[in-house]
Structure formats: C-alpha cells, structure tokens
Length: 70
Image (cartoon, rainbow, N blue to C red; front, side):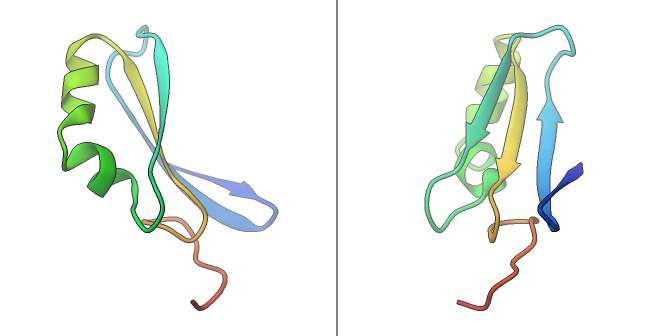
C-alpha cells in the first residue's frame, strides 16, 4: 500500500487481524520494513499475538521513493 507525503510516495504494509491493537513498526537506519521486521520474524510473532501491524518503509528506503541520490 502507498500514500503520498509532500510529493514523495511512501510504502507501508498491513498484516494481522483488522480488529487487533495496531502497532507501527519503523525500521532502523540503512534498512527497510521487510529486512528489519519480516526477516527477523517479529512480524510473525506480533500478528500471532493478535496485533495489527503497520509496517512502514521510510523515505528513501525499501519500496518508498528515493528522491535523492546518495
């Protein structure tokens, strides 16, 4: 899923039950949502406990827009 913030497309994913308590997962520097939270199985653990996961790829990371060259 995506949304636009000041002309920059940001990617996020929703996982878990719709009625679960929401948790926003933000990755660390030089990472992205899938590497930081899916690859380490935290997403699986949290959704298994009934939480609704909102996983964000910050600007310039993962599937979000990268408006500047490094």
